[in-house]
Image 1 (cartoon, rainbow, N blue to C red):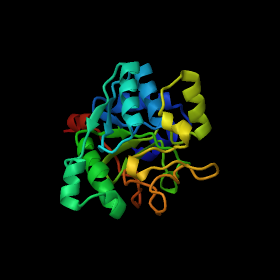
Image 2 (cartoon, rainbow, N blue to C red):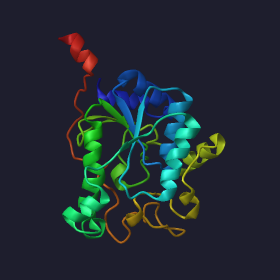
Image 3 (cartoon, helix red, strand yellow):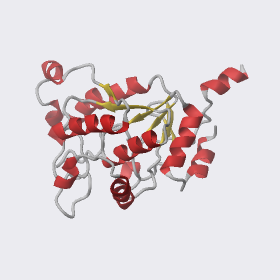
Length: 244
């Protein structure tokens, strides 16, 4: 599969079409990592609505808002699916013992590596592709995201069905399909992560201003882009087997 050609062919297609292609191409070795933002809830809705054979998990850092944990349970009940918990090797208390209290205040990148990036790397190790809910207009790191791309950081295909969507597209879908979302969105939290690193956003501020407020940091490291010259050819395990 040539990544660039596939990305071009799927550009402009509906998220449902992209998800159906991804499931047909990679299932059962495909997973969706949701952080329970509105975009993630939409993809859960689409996966369940179209009965797609896609594994779903979330990174439970142990520092999520109570509202996020409640939404997690509500989505499972609403759609009749299981959203697996992927947790760090260290509990919050264990991290404090090893690295000192409130590591997120002193070394937020290190905290994200321990509680998010390393667990995600382990979680993706058994898959050929993963799905994300990122959109291009969320951050500068995400502005070049393609519908399908090769993820150098984690070594597998990355599928971004909502890459071309705007916040208006998201709000419309949630409203029309009555998708459950985090009540914190209505309280000034457009982007919701861990409690210690997320604050409300004032009118007129950028959507992710409330993440790691006061720092240049805007990403936890899951979607930071690495430089590369060209997309590699990606051959599925099935194709490798048939070619041997």
